[in-house]
Length: 143
Ligand code: FES
Image 1 (cartoon, rainbow, N blue to C red):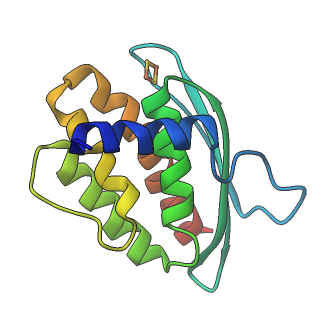
Image 2 (image 1 turned 60 degrees about the horizontal axis):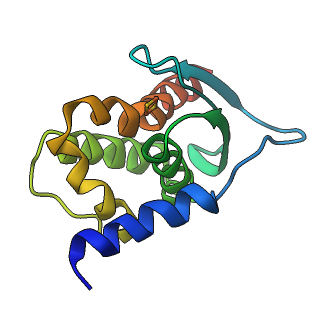
């Protein structure tokens, strides 16, 4: 199988079977609502933060396959990590979107989004969830 095909499959799997989709019944520490200004698609991210750690994250939203797959991966990837580790991951993801040669040994599915940087219009799709994460981390630190 070609790498592109493998990556497409990983993205479609997250899109069709999103991890952590939904909302918490209680105990969410922070909720961030963001939209992609270029298309109006939106995401609402909730995180449970305890002792500077992302205990869990969930999302709901409407968007293209790239944005929803990215949200699914992100919420899975940051689970159990400290806020600074989660922020490092967000920075690494930004670097990936800029075309830098990074890979995610800590959550390999994210590598499937590496092709997105060739399509400038899609970068905003892929980064929507990560921008919500960055805001969520900021709010958690303030709170
Ligand atoms: Fe709207 Fe991708 S087209 S988030």
